[in-house]
Length: 252
Image (tube, helix red, strand yellow):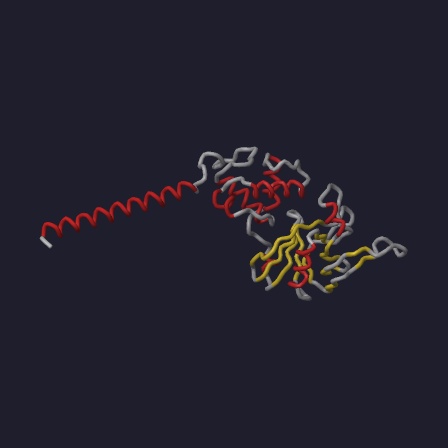
């Protein structure tokens, strides 16, 4: 090989490498641009917030919804987009808090979700004081099962009606009763089922409620003081995670 031919081949290799690097960089930039949210829509709060909006305030909304136990899809989360999973979560929250169920976030919906979520990730110190705790938030209407300081599961619940309020404070699970029943309807009536019960304050328990499962949330609906769960699979799972003596903290 002549020196001249060698220099030509070397120059060609350098040029090919440069083109490859530039092409790869352009491809990566195109891929990144494809998944970038539209920076102009919800980087300042603009209400109503609705389907296909994007931006940092959509992400703030999603963070609060996730803290309240709702599932946000990876795609909605990554794009900071008000997609299908975000709309489902908003509609569920509107149902829980007796708001107009339209899947869009007006001022009332934003304020209610924001107030219910509070400081995202924050828990009372009692909820992280032991290896396993049940942290029951009356404002958010949820139970959070906390294991070694981390929230493992969040479950929607309802509480006692006015005059039969669910007690607040710190308690311990003193009885587990998988097929519990209640004589609340009177001595001459069939006993009411309250399975997968975790009793923590006298006769007050976390348990599955067939009535809650059938009727859902509605104004004036509630228990006689217990913490009702409508999701049978969730409360059954919880029952087997919680040992006797587990700390239960109920707060607003």
